[in-house]
Length: 200
Image (tube, rainbow, N blue to C red):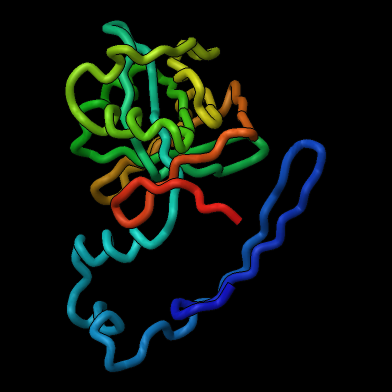
């Protein structure tokens, strides 16, 4: 793929256990010298600039859940990624201002619930305030974390590490249970809005 920001080549290798991707990317001069966006480094990069630029990167939507002494907790995130196949590791990022993350942290576990295109209401609920589990049905995973009904996929994890990174905490979990529904379509997040997956 090529474009204004550079070019990338992605190679997918399929096996009976899944697929692996190799990405080769070259960053090239992105924009014409006269474009103000090409001079952000000199002008100073702001949070709004980062938000606008990174908003061009399409992500899925995940609800991170856990069960503590006071019951289930959860929050919506879109910074979720696989880290390692062996051992099986994933990560998500939690805002340092989050009031939910400390509760999840204390449990020592989390379940990453990947939402389907039909579950935008769950994304909005777990991104908001109030009783997030009212009317929500779920099962318990190996760790005891809630697995929301009807999700596209889930990864139930034990927290093994965390790193402070600016205004977020990078949380790394070791997967102990996972499942996917390949017939479902994912919920996407693009430029600060929820989007369906476009057809071929």
